[in-house]
Image 1 (cartoon, rainbow, N blue to C red):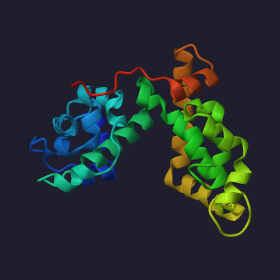
Image 2: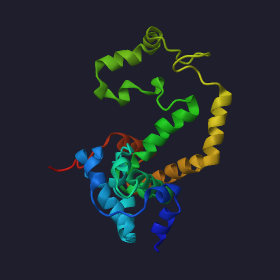
Image 3: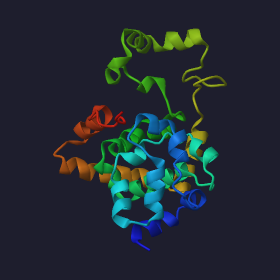
Image 4: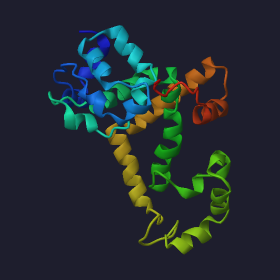
Length: 232
């Protein structure tokens, strides 16, 4: 058994998701991501089942493992009760653990997710926080979105939300004791350590690419090589 396969086999999601693939392709047939991306869950499961270390390493460094939407449609159809979606989660986790995620465009976006959604959860208690969604970072949203961001408090007041205010209601201010509990959960589950690794490996990759931290972040946030869609 190779090193990478052994590490995968220790992940509970891999243990739950990998039984005995018969290569029927049902998972690919039902997969929404396979309809649009260069993504084939049947091939992924087959690759893992063969325990081919070079192929597994290639997967960990590829765009492929980041295309899955984790809808778990594959689980509902597999005649052997495999769960390719869980296997993908295990692959993503190992890719982050070893730093291989920085070798692909979609993988490098893990830094963006960490600094945006991840840090917003810890700072505000929400994975999407309106005040952080600036028009400058999303010009494609158009002039209506610019007006909404310029008039955020009035918009939320009219919508009936409780943005940043104490008490009940949508987008209310989360008490500090609840935020402290979130931090403890992240610490206990290893999420804080994972965030540190994402920062560490991203910093190393930025250096390799000759980019500053800000330049690397913006590139990860905005760049698309236009080679992700499945060819007809």
